[in-house]
Image (cartoon, rainbow, N blue to C red; front, side):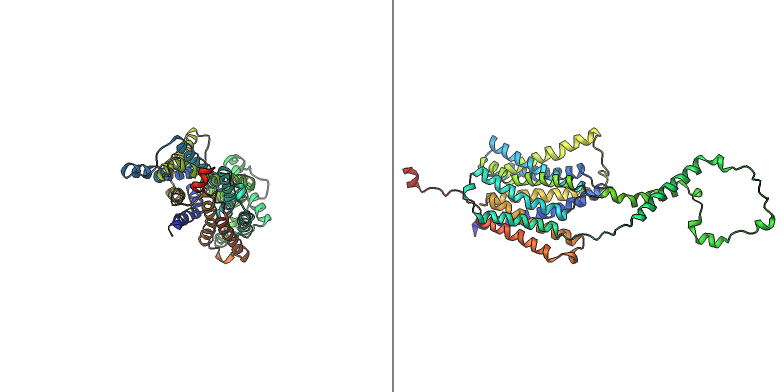
Length: 417
């Protein structure tokens, strides 16, 4: 049973990385103040959370109790590299959400592609390509097909289709309001018309006034010229919001590019970190500290410099406490998941089957979180459930049939050779 103790930390990582996407998506939206999705500030919050969990905590433990292993230049290099690719992957997620990607399909795609990258990177570093069986490759294929099925049959929120004529009407209304306002502001002189040559109004005609009650009941008959500045601003804001739906369409090319960058980065994370840990004598917290320092450099210092230049301006700000909280929580989930990976390695797990397990089950947690939080359980189809099942089955196949590496030779055989 001792050999399976690493699975406890694998489960922790699956849960933490499963909720990472939905939580970060909430943080980006709230930090932008309802104006799209923020990017640099939520990314900084992720880096700050990593600094607290992956730098401060290891330093305290190493200073007080210590652990096995030692510092080495090779271990520092590989562990820092692992943190760098992890941070780049996190940035890819942030940007995918920035361009209107949704966690319900962004994260399953990342988690479906990353284990394939992870497996081939591991096999390249360990030289075990020849030991991989057809069943093993079939498991990877099943994971990929299952992830694609999750994307295809994902539950979606019902969006009311707008009538094209209504959009045209709102555009015309905006133009009309603007012209009325311009006339009321700049055409005061023209409103003072000279006396017309028409017949003067008699006293009897002046008594023919419209019914005041009916005028009050029909606000549409009010003269637009009599609207105040505040009324006009409110009208423009409402119409602009109605027309803004076209701007919120997802940019699929950029989203796909960001998903690819994240899959490559997070796919290489496990094998690279495992190598750094091995070069530090199997230590847990020293490699983790290097990961935290890399995140701090890439996800905190670099965005802080970019925001300071004023070149990158985005909606929202630090005053949105809810956005800061959710973004920090997402970073904390990511950092705890990374620590779970390190402990899983330390308790005998190998990246060639730990990472596919994580990337196989984390999308299930992600999708369930999204469907429950968005109240989409009634829209879950059997094909969607079947796709999730394929991801799980594929991950189990990868676990069972993963190449184990060459078995060590017996002592007498080694001596003869």
